[in-house]
Length: 432
Image (tube, rainbow, N blue to C red; front, side):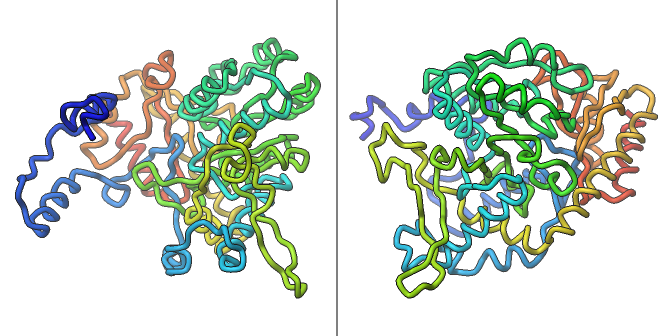
């Protein structure tokens, strides 16, 4: 096999993997029993640190939230845990109903009438939404706010490069809000889709009051990326006039999981129903008049000619979507609002406390949901090192995403943080 691939040894196949993330040597003996091997790997695994061992204020797209104890118990039931593709509806009514319930919940959250069965993650759902927008408008350019999650924008560029389409970005002000004048200047008749995120990557809740009107005036579609947990207290994408709503559903009952698996949600207006990629479950009636669920409008490469498919992704995050459905059902409408209010409260308290510290600056003029930018006189690496020694992860440094924000970092406070936790973090910062 190696000869066929033109490689002399297995390591040659790993050349594309960056050195910084490649494990050179696990120091595992070539001959070891299963028991010995398990012990060795467990020892290596102890180097990982999770939020049970450290007080974390890390957000930036992956968030620590409370997960009701009933959720993992229900999710682990065999009929859900082992279920696969529901191609035979007569044998898959339970799975199909679960997906339909998920779609209905996402539709209600985003205030848009149609939702699909999910994508791999938020970045994938955004890229698929952009492609759907370009197909619908028959244009080749996407306009995206620079305050949209950097990883999402990276996935978007990868997708659109392969589709021979262009991505153009507009910036944000010092307070984190998008630059309106630059946006207006770049919004031309060549643009097929415009992408905003609110709350954006910097934590700022954007005011999109007149955006949909301007976007639709040039014949483009509006795509809004949102945190679904914020929609219990903030305006939904559909209420802003969005044509498509996408984002990361990890906050709906999924652990941080060192980065995955996650859940990309996707919803749209009824006019775009045939542009929606991935799976779509519909409710109908069988020959006896009983309620039944089926896969519908399957514009995918498995069912039609590949070049005419809405998407070449042929699976969805079914178990993750079920977790989100269980979470939303357990907490209910009132619970979603209460959790959102707790996130607003924690961020407000922490932002005000940090703003009083010497050597740190926080802009309190803009609304935020559960994270915000802190500017420091000292390098973030120094602050991070000192606080990690105290068992505190202070957040995410922003210079890796925005070079001009050299000493700034993003701090997140969710409902999992008590007043004592917040005060401990503030004390730690004051000693830096």
